[in-house]
Image (cartoon, rainbow, N blue to C red; front, side):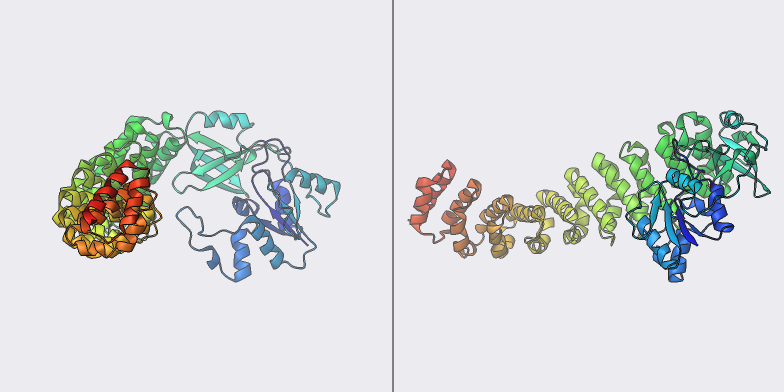
Length: 573
């Protein structure tokens, strides 16, 4: 017994390499169900159903007794975790330790996996035919067309005449009828060397993808939209959405806008999820219908959001990066979502941020909601809200005045960008309303030794601004501010020297207590720092040796520094 691990695309003839021979699907089925080998799908898991063989999920289940390692599935069926292809082979080897051999057939080179022989499909087929592997191929079968179409071209002619089709086909002796759209796989398919062409379809409504060989197609008819059973049924919305995603130019814009407008007007009478998917597709792919689509999206969002609803709101944010016009009429809706701790909050806050950046006045009514979002536990939501508030504060500081407490809280964030934007917003408020900023001095001092240089720079700079109106408050923290004179960032040192100058008038003794740091700062690489320190020494009568100042007066390369040193000496003499 061999363990055979097959990839699907560019490996098995349901989707062969365009210029190479593929492994016939009949061979895979034969080895699995007749010859008694262990045959597994390790690539595209569509092969699990096509060949009726186990795949990656089953290998995890057999190894662990459950599939908890894969985590939850999202709405598209994807698991939170998926093993790498090499790991999939190792799991199979562990499951079947007594196998005669291990063969992997894949267009990706897996020859480096211990214990496994790797083949590309074309080499594998040749080796089987030559009898080199001990695997016998099944007896050949007659694959000539015997269905309702004589050739692949006849099928293609029908496909060219519509977008939605009623397909009748026969699989394993059972006749099935579906409402479908046609699509080409990512890797182009072609007629297998020893078989008829395969055509790919996607069912309208549940997005199931499958392929049908020419002999199995019994009937294929285009279905116009106006003949769909119910224009509000999910199939109608899904059909138009797929056409919009594949070929936007082919969609009748009047029909699209009518469907969206009617769905928005009476959401209880439609398949809400499919209507919402159509609205999102229109936002993404149809500029002419974007405004109507945005209106419909807001109308169709559920009170209790699902992953689809959250994705829809996120799609509006992505559209807003190119054109924010359509969102301006929905600031109230966005504010309502941004103020609530729900799945909508992050995407809604992101949309408001885009609007605030482009036009701060457009989100003034949403400031209370942004204030609430600025206290969110989600780091991204908080970051978006704080940046939006900083944009508004730039032009309308009075509107952000009530959000001071939230901004002070955001200033303590571990995220550097959030801290910086919170400081920027507080700085704009402080510049216009000094009394409002006085209570935040303690919080500013707390971040003076932050790891991020931008945060340190902005915090000590804002203390300098506050010192103009509240020197007595700021000078209480002279020790912490003076410590920034030793900062490895030049701007932090400049800002610290300015803050000490402005606050020093309130308590010269506090400046004199910094004698050692001020003396050392006379050798700072920044002439601005050196000049400011000379002024501090003179203003507060700091006991710095005259000889030190005289050296600066005579030899400093900067004229302003030399003049300030001369003035300081005159004060100390």
